[in-house]
Image (cartoon, protein in one colour):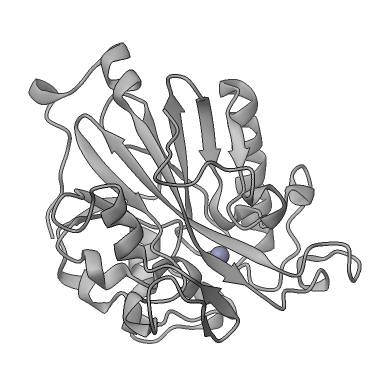
Length: 277
Ligand SMILES: [Zn+2]
């Protein structure tokens, strides 16, 4: 493990970086049999399926992969055919989706997840050669030899999906925000509560404008400006506090909130190989 900080000598600055910045959205599958009650809503009021996109951010100073899907590529029968595992289903392998836009482990620099739950880390081990950006609290939780409910909530870490990251080159973020490329255009926002070290991602695009990929601080747009009440948050109180901060940040920056799991908006997102810039 090593700590890394951006080198100001090679740092892209101002408009040039912003104009060259691209964001790809990949459809990494669907989760079924979700109930409204587990989120504190009346039965049948929320969609019973959720989407699990993955994102690739291409910046002049490097490339960041954000989340790695819900089904490992090795568990697919064939790329392009629907594969079902547990409550997950997906048709495309992440490796193939990335290859279609010219990327793979050979030219991706940074790997980060919103958090360690299975629907976000399925292909984590594929990127163990990349530099992993993770909050200290999250990494501690992921490799805790004796996970307890207090720190993990009902979802204990499933290390088979990310065990190879233990020895990866790692930037440990000290439970705070982290400006990935040093120019303010791609910023990891510390947003704990769903897990101990959950994080969200702010991306400031030239044409599209600023957006905030919230991760699982919310699962539905209905949860904005509402206290958290979900059975799988480690802490509803801490999640509620993270919501308050993200909402204030979005107000201040004008960022469009992207809630990855809300299937109702999923179809409207431009999918790779198209991109946002
Ligand atoms: Zn999730």
